[in-house]
Length: 98
Image 1 (tube, rainbow, N blue to C red):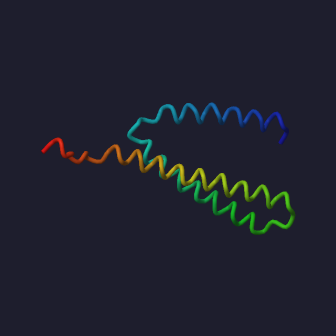
Image 2: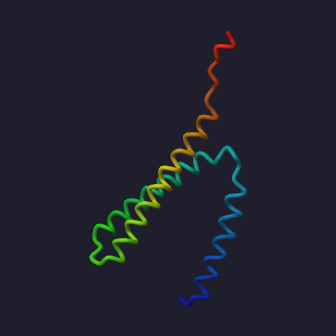
Image 3: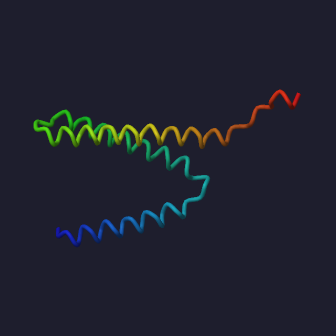
């Protein structure tokens, strides 16, 4: 494929992704985040496998960078999901309510 075709696909995927995500209601964001966390876990495992088979410095450095970024993305996704789920828990009455 030529560079122009790949660039066109990339730009179109940005527009389609933005339109799809912007149309999702607030109720569905938590399940979608959980699904995204599962995908990020697969990406992390793939990065670990590829980095483990690296024989030269460049793939090793890129693999380590991929592992770090995938880990940050995975942990951040779980933190955001946990915060979103906290919003749906009933509030406990404080000492002032007694």
